[in-house]
Length: 251
Image 1 (tube, helix red, strand yellow):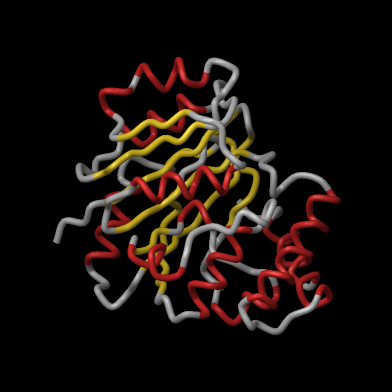
Image 2: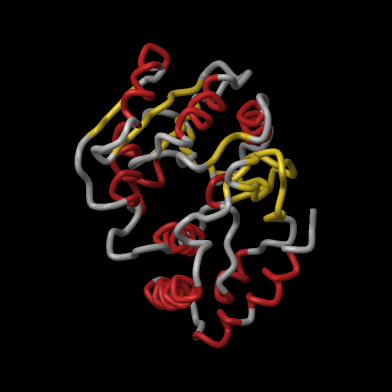
């Protein structure tokens, strides 16, 4: 069974990284990809680069938005694939067969509604230099109450669930992806793990930088759990910190 995969890239003033992202999508060996780029009216050379590839991109939007999650929602509205995934403008696929591997996994697992894989963080200027691994091996839905989630850039889910359960909530600054996964899993969306490294993610993203951002993120995680009827508190969420520190020593 051939699945149509929609990949959404959102960007804003991303001229230093967007070319790598686009080329990593266009170099995929998998043929049935619908690629959508949603730009937030960049003021640098982002759109000049994007337009170099316009003949190979299904849909391009460039207009003001209300932040990254609003841009993701715009992409979801435009997507027509069987499954939808997000690849942000700081990220690249780990290999040319990344999407093919995910599609084959999903096609072989019809009982699943979606899947996720592993991710590695890389240095911003040296994308072959891995700084740590974000493994999904030990992820389980019950760990959501402790602030754990599967790697969002590797998360692919059937499009219909965005229609049925809603998209990313704009009231979150850095944790709307966590809230969406908590909501989906709370409503019985069945996910499986594809045991491959699918994405390389540059260090320095909004949700991985700074002490105060970390505090804010954890407060949003507590809020997301409570909104979805998942018991937690800030102390339970803080327990994930030692486990994250361990990942810094893994290569």
